[in-house]
Image (cartoon, rainbow, N blue to C red; front, side):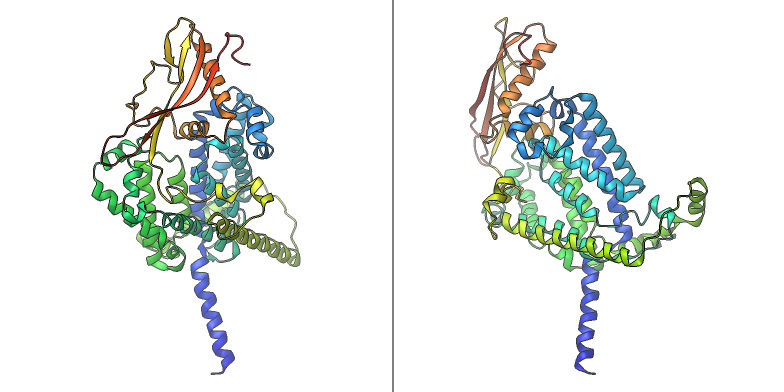
Length: 501
């Protein structure tokens, strides 16, 4: 055997080994497509509870305040074309239609493009509400533009004689790398602190009553179990690169462990869509052996979803549309252009995350637009924040009575009895924490103006003035936890006719 044969053998083996790790089964892509469509729908439904408050000029962030506080983002959203309720509701409905279209796989590529555009516009309309789940969701949608999500188990698949196959290219490598980078970056941040290495970080997380659900509060009573979860999760994120390196059933088992941990987060913490997005992202790592086993277990191949009978029925009921044939040479150039764009995107992802970790210095011009330090995967890292807190919004009525104008109740400074510490939703918590942040100085006046208007429109006894306090309660695992009141702002509400000014 000559040297060239040995080299060619290594190359062939290397390509196969790489393809096994960066390749994604088309059935996996189908389940991912359905899952991400369901997440988009869930996100819209959760946000719609506060549609008026967070996305219209009648709420806490009118378009004028958005433009003043977030000038760059305000130019990137068409949700600001109108501040009316009907306009925002229409955009929500349109986004829901495209999400459903993704779920069933109808015109999948077009539906993905519009879902991505509408999601970004929605997120830019109120950046104060965003968490890591939101950031990961739009990245997954961006990579999805380069993937054949509708090739299997979809309406689109009825038009073709598709079959199960693995796709391995720059786009599949990019979306898998994107997910692994989230865990690797988070692990590196965690290792820079002490609490995770000491096994105390999860105990601090579950001491935050504004974050935990009733299930989380129950789990907080078992410190040894929290220490175990601390060490297990740290070990998992540190070794998360195995999501890429493992294959077959070993990969499936490791993915299942991550999914189980994120499902535990969903049960125990108020994290909005973050656990759902994370589980959806992990679906991409499921290998072909999982679907093959399910097919054998059900004694019918998943091809039954695309049977000839359904394809013939679809062809009979669908209008015949003639599409021009694309020359092979043109098609090849399109594929090369798409691969080049995907490769550039992958490189930018790697450089950007290196910058968030401090390994790469970005120019000042970049930092002024989007500072990597402010957009890093550092959830509960290097250490979880050690302070709980809630808001009190005392105000004086014309009658002289004192009330909490936000909760519309009597003024109480002690910790709220409800599990969420008085935050109506997770999005409300994100917004109010932004209100007390020194960097968002335009938010407190807008919030107090909203509170004054809401009270005076629903009560005969007008609100004359209002103040906003954040009650901080540092966490102490082994003792008392004293509180400290931080005054954020004051406002005179004026007369009923002046409140909207």
